[in-house]
Image (cartoon, rainbow, N blue to C red):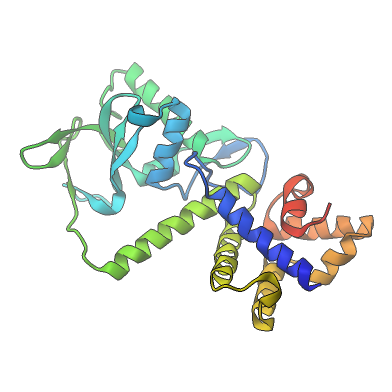
Length: 289
């Protein structure tokens, strides 16, 4: 029983770490695989640019990159939206983009994912250019090309003329660390949700559990040396995530009917599909074949 619990927890850590490797577009996560209209409401500036590079096939010195993040940029007019500035490797120019706009883009696919959001952005951009708007949307309300002024160090909108400038730099080390940790968590959550087709709530729980197990291992605890308190904590977390007990998992290994019951319960709890459970989640996360 102890070994199975540890295997489950350690596999969770592997899922968390593996899904966060690489610089691909990642996904905004979705709990279904039904074809229809979706958005990426949690996409970040970094994820958007990574996805643009995937869509465009740009790498190396030709790749797009974030120049000013949304928490580093203010637009010289009252605006409730968060703007970030990127170097667009495909177009060879700088752009200011509204984060809220990117998150509101509607596209059609089988689930929410950042690649589709970036692809649809390019489609919208092509449409704008077709109608003569070569520097962004018609009014610069969603995105616009910007030019860098080396004299004052600001970017200026080609459509609006608005100034995009750095916010006052923070010297609060704790705040900086907190922002980095939050961004890292967002990246993990979105990639887990996209890779395993689970709900954002489940992806968040998996990411946090993976961090917890990784922290235990870094303390030098070998598998057989985890304390009873650690085991109890992991057991509670796993049961909360999957909606099943360890006893049900063990019984499912030897009984097809119970396996079907476990699959149904986990599928409902984790916001995914039975097929995804059969192909990936059950064998990788719970060790049930």
